[in-house]
Length: 402
Image (cartoon, rainbow, N blue to C red):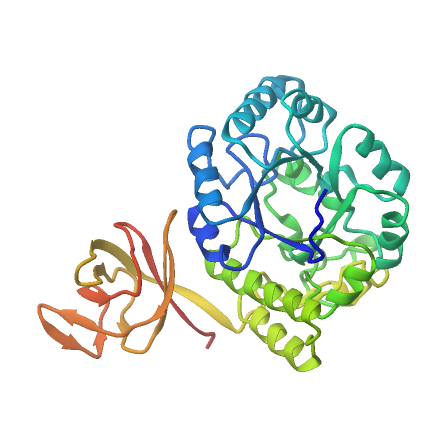
C-alpha cells in the first residue's frame, strides 16, 4: 500500500512520445497493448515491445500500469493468458482489470491488481470484495459524488483512485452499447466509434422534430477537477487519473503539468484562486469539449453536456505542416519537407512521432544556406531543433483558431 501523503498522478499514454511528454510531471502511466484494451486504436505498444516500453518507463522513474479491461469473450480467454504472461515477464507494477478471468490470471502470476472503473464499484462492500481477491486499488465508478467517495474510503483499506480530467462517457462508467448497436463496433471491446459525439435530432410523436438545446445532444463535456484538489484529498482519493490515451502528446504534457503543479501547490499550502484560473486557461488551450465537474457535486444536468459544439472547444489548434526527412545531431538541425503548409520564424511548433515529443518556437530556417523568415509549402528546409528528432516525425503548427 502507498504511504506517500501526495496523491499519485497517473497519465494515460499510447506510445513513447506520450511517455516523454508527461514524464516530468506524472508519477505513473497507464497504457494497454494491442489486445484486450478499451482503446483498440492504441496499438503502438505490443506484446513484442512491452518489455522495452517498461524499461523506458523505469528509466524515467515512473510506475507502469497495464490496462487489460475490455470484455473477455470465450474466444479471448487465450489472449488473456498471453497478455498476463507478457505483463509478468515485463515486470509491470500492476494490471488494471475487472473481469474475474483476468483477475485470476493476474493472481496466479503474482501481479498487483488494480480494479478498473469498468467494474462500476459504487459501495464499500464491493470495494472490500475486490480487496479480498487481492486488489490493492480500485478505480471507482465515475458516477459517484465526493460525499459517496468519502463514505467508501472510510470503510475500506483499499486505495481509492478516481478520474480527475478527460473525456466523460454518456453511459455508466463506459458501459455503452450505442456504437455496437449503430455500427457493430463494441465500445466494451475497445472499438467505440463515438456516435455520442455526432449531430442528432430529437424526434417526438407523429414524426415531429422536437425543440432541443443544440445538435450534439449526447456529447458530454470533459471532466476537469483542477479547482477541487483539496476536496478530492478530503474524500480519501489517493490516486488521480488523467484520461487521454488517444489524445496527442501536447495535450498530455499540458494536462499532466497543470495537475502536478496543482497537487504540489495544494500540499505546500499555496493553492490559490489565481493559480487555479491560470491552470484552467492552460487546460482550455488544448483539446477539450468544454469542462464540467462530472458527478462529483451531484448528477449533472444540461451543464454537463456540450450541445452546441462539436469535438474541440479549444481556441488553439494543431495544423499539420510537414515531415522530418533527416536529423543532424551535430548541427542540432533537421531537414523538414513542408507538405501541408509553410512555417515562419517565431511560429510555435510541435514535432511528434511514436518516440518523439518536442515543443518549441521556430528559431532558424534555412534553404540552401539562405536564412529565411518564412518557408512555403513544398519547400525542403533546415530547421534548428531543441532536441533529438527522427525521420518521419511530423511537424505541427500550434495557432489560435481563426
